[in-house]
Image 1: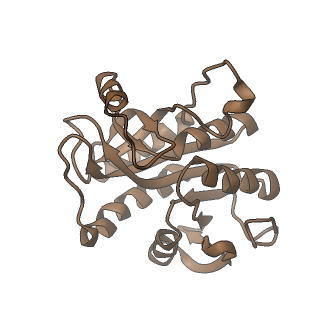
Image 2: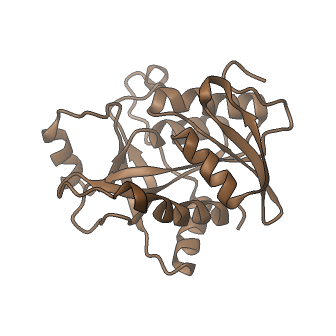
Image 3: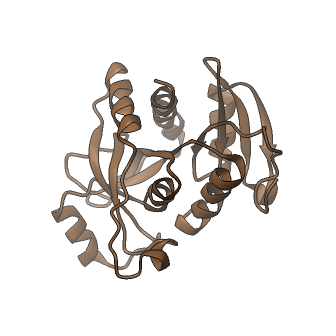
Length: 234
């Protein structure tokens, strides 16, 4: 049990999927896990542990933004010895070839600032995914008939961004999409020698203004969860 996670030692699996929304964690656990049990309700940040194809899995909400994710990822790694952490979430598309409902598998994550920035000082650390997880996720997606976009994303530290010039440069340099958590997750995984990946569904688009209707989100997000699970245990 930690400050932010009420689970006892042993109630958290070695593999944790991390959606930002705690209710998405509940939905994913009820949809994909067998015998799912709620192991965390502290501050309403729901977490569930069950099994998928015989493998123990925890699905734990992370909240929005890198500071929130950093709290949960730190505690999962340091107090529960979690080995594999996969972010499953939504993102905004930034390239014309990236469409609504498309899947992005993040190889790297660019950012202006993370909770870890104070450690690096003048160094521009380059957070990246675990290659084994990334390759397995790509293979799992293709096996389901999905061609994912694989490359760099941008982890913003604000939701209501007022820097169109910065977005223009991100697009110019091939950034596929924008979200708010992956850079810190990848940094913490590197620091503690763990495996991390972000598998993202494009829910809106910065260039076109399109957005995925709420009623269509669950079916699209379901593909993402299944790919994450297959990657974790391939």
